[in-house]
Image (cartoon, rainbow over all chains, first blue to last red; front, side, top):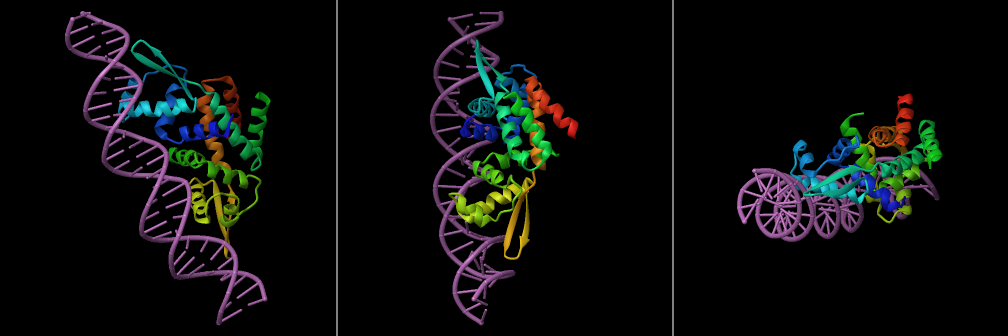
Amino acid sequence: MTAAGIDRVFKALADPTRRRVVEALAGGSTVTASALAADLPITRQGVAKHLAALRRAELVQAERVGRETRYRLDGAPLEDAARWIATVGAEWDERLGALERLLDRRR
Amino acid sequence: MTAAGIDRVFKALADPTRRRVVEALAGGSTVTASALAADLPITRQGVAKHLAALRRAELVQAERVGRETRYRLDGAPLEDAARWIATVGAEWDERLGALERLLDRRR
DNA sequence: GCAAAGCGCAACTCATTAGTTGCGGACTAC
DNA sequence: GTAGTCCGCAACTAATGAGTTGCGCTTTGC
């Protein structure tokens, strides 16, 4: 993944609201911006902005169905973030070295 | 780790300059703010601010030696970030599920 | 056909943050 | 002891980002 891509992923995960959105989508279900807004202390448009940031990081995919837009998690970029952490952490500690080897095996 | 702690870690990693600093420290060596600034396109005070953010996230430790301050990486919080990614990603894909089991084994 | 639901776009405010300059204090070397 | 080196603190600017309101478009249901 490009450096700019990793940057977008980490920036996307830096916001607690966006992490909550990612957690809500982790089960594989699809959800609309309005439904998310019902569970969050911000407006639908606020949620829409966060979803746009997650889309830029390619962490969510959007699908228009009738009058609603369903968002789905794409966890693939998470692996890139995990690999960055593993690479950096491997030199610091052997625990994260095991993590790195695991990710390398799957590459 | 606390939710606020994870937030600080992800926020710390969200900046490309800070990631470069973390990478520079990954080998285990200690480094001063001035030395880092020599390799970065920003001033020493700019670097100092980034190091302060990394300290807040407990990703670096500072030690004053004479007139210089040596910074050292503490990779432990990286594992918390990796665990968040693994937990979320595990429900999305089995690859990241393996990552989660690895981290759980080490807990 | 019409009301309501759901969305997207645009403009705006407010807070945060990356980066700068300027300065003064502490340590080192000669 | 003086010059040079390193650092920390403070004030400032500029840019980014989170969140809001307002509005108009499309789709659904009756």
